[in-house]
Length: 186
Image (tube, rainbow, N blue to C red):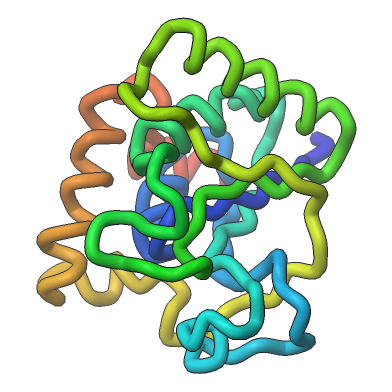
């Protein structure tokens, strides 16, 4: 099985990680930072908005179980790709919407999907998601990994992350991995 990588930024990485952790065919999700100009950034430096990094997730997936396009369809359904440098109350370039492609094929798929969503007028406002080449990805500090799983009752998780997970489960129930799927994959 040849695994592939997708790198996506759509606001707080806790939200994206919590959703993609539940997607059938996704083998690993790592929260981190990418797209900036400072080596080995820390959360505090990224939050300053001065490193150029976006909070992002790097997803390792099996393309025989889920396609890159399907990962992007989920991505566009769980965040607002029409707000520049913000998602809800999270404001700053580190919260921008971006697709960091790893191949020419990924770039083409991303651009085609944005064209289709635009033509279909899925969003009232124009999509501002950047589609840019993947650069160095820096995993975030350990306390950010699996944050939603470890902190489900934290207020941000209850009011921001949980609704995105619920939306994914409703819209993409056929793509949600069950506990039995996880055991079967091990």
